[in-house]
Length: 123
Image (cartoon, rainbow, N blue to C red; front, side):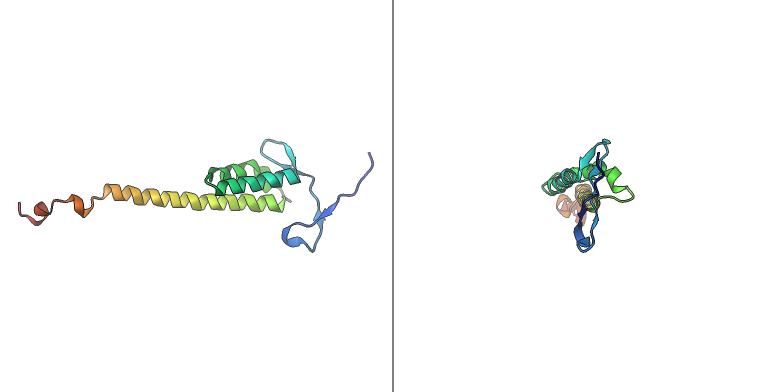
């Protein structure tokens, strides 16, 4: 009922400058999470992606999509989401490269599979 001035917090590299504290962070479900809760979830999704579940990096970007595309997004969540998507792209490129190399190794016959006598015309 009483008007309260917003608290001032420092974020990341702008520690010298105070910015307005954000009370809520939007997600794809339309819910509004508290900043501390959203940042905790963002960090967990990044770490779980590192420990063998890179698909969670895509989920991370999808879940915080409305926040990432806001005019004034939470810098911590936006940074984590962009880095998660970049890491997923690197993993996907490595997987595609492995697939192409592995597929070519199975399609192209190696010299050990060729009968040397037939190759040299002796028989």
